[in-house]
Image (cartoon, rainbow, N blue to C red):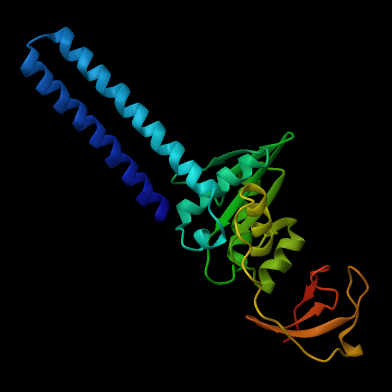
Length: 242
């Protein structure tokens, strides 16, 4: 829906430009009574409009590149897609936002080192579910891509993580996105992590599969979970069985 709305706004903008040029032509023709002078004035108006549009686009790109995670949290879906385009271009990827309609599950197409990557962009205030992973798997097949990613400013549900693992889909969650942001915009401030309540370690919690350290029971904003006792050096977590 949001992409269709943006496409409509683009058509309205183009219609506005055409109307301005017609008005300029009409006024110039009336005042000069010369076809040559009218064409010259209309051409100058077109050049001015192009310069203004390019200037505005460059300002918008620069503003996007300076965005932090808090700015992203207040973006709409389309703004987030264009932010990711600038983000991945800064990381050496060829990046394009897909057409406003008929994207077949991909919001962006990336290219690097001969690989094509389809990306679903999810600017969410809640955890991203399994549907996003399903759609990007379909997009990978449709675009004949080598990889499929889902990038979000939020986190992912357990079902989404399980399907992504089986479908070899890369999930870029909030923490990974913040790391990328800090490379693009080093002056961006990393938000303070959510306060964690660490409970008494228990041998029944097992050991970390990444570093071998003991796992401890923690409580965060999404409830209880097992986290590596070596945090923040090791960020491995495990969901508790329901």
